[in-house]
Each structure stands twice: as structure tokens, then as C-alpha cells.
Length: 224
Image 1 (tube, rainbow, N blue to C red):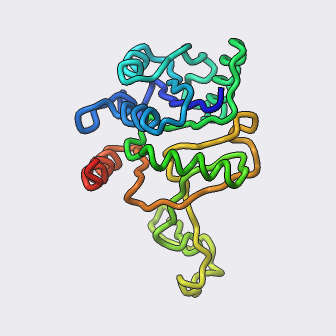
Image 2: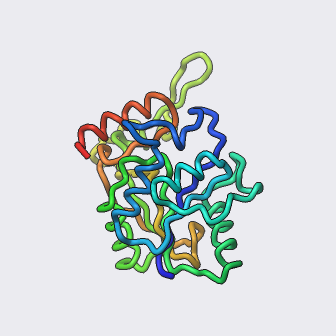
Image 3: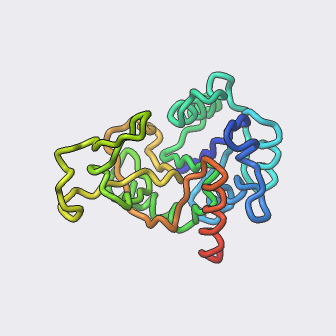
């Protein structure tokens, strides 16, 4: 088969309890990632990798498959996305099923749309990349970032840029935290990585209650 969507959704969430299936404007938040993948018409299979039965049932309700439960070695909070992806690939390989491309879509990325998933695959193919991700530019120059000591004293991480004009500093970007397209045989470990820029309004990393509220506001503003 050609394209696989993997939506990782671990059961244990410490900062926001049951984060992956918490209600987000009327639906479990994971439903938005599943529905975006379905609407994109890009995938031969859309699967959720989870160790939690409640998440598994929710995923199936909204159209994803859960062909197997996540292994115990990738179910704790020390396992990264690359580990989960490799584990999923191995499980499919045991069934003699292989994929050409994989898209790992985060379960808590309700601003992910079918259009942006399509752009990601186009970028992966056109650039012959190992992996592609959406990125957002930092609103302020990271070269002039500050660190603070226990007494409140501040100093520059890079004092050599303290007097440099903002417009003369190189633009920096951060991962949008939405999804990762990759060639299945390379995974996230391939070195030929590319990004494509999106705006701050198109994404929201969700790690705390403030992030959650911001995601809801952005979603409403998009009138989706």
C-alpha cells in the first residue's frame, strides 16, 4: 500500500488528564485529526496507535482503525514519535504489509486540515525529501533570547548579537507540532528534512490549559 496515517495517542497524559479524547468544541480532540486524514483522501489506512481501550473505541467511532494495541515498550512518556512509528511499521511488517509514505499526525492538532496534509505530501514528493513538516517562524529573534538566574538577573544567550538590529538577524523557525510526512523506509531519522511555512493562526501546540483555550479561539476564528 502507498500511504499510512499514524495518529499516536497514549493513554497517560500528566499535564492535561485524558488529553487525547477530551472534548474540544463538541467532539473528542482526536476526532479532528482523524477526520482531516479521512477528508484528505490521501491514505490507504488511517490508524491510531494507543495503549488505552477508551481511546481505541473513540478512534474507531470517528473512522480510524486500531489494528493492534501499542506495545508496552512504547507506551510510557519516555518513548518518542520515532520509536512509535518504528514499532507500528514492525507490526504491519508481521502482516506482510508495507507502505511507501507515512504521515504521523498528532492527536491534539485540531487545526490540521485536509489541505495542509495535501501540501505536506506534495512537498515530500516534489523535494524528494526523507521527511517534511509544517514550521512557524519565531515572532522574535532567537539570537537575542535571554536567560534568567534564580535572583531574577538576566543575560543574553548570545551576547554577540545584543546590539544587532532585528532585521539583520537570520529568521528562525520552530516545529508547528501538527504532523510529519516521511518516506516509510527513512522515518524521522532521515537527514534530508524539509519544512514549509505556515502562520501562527494555523497551528497551536497544546501542553496546558492556556494552550487549549488558544486552540479553541483559533479554531473558531477559522470558522471551520
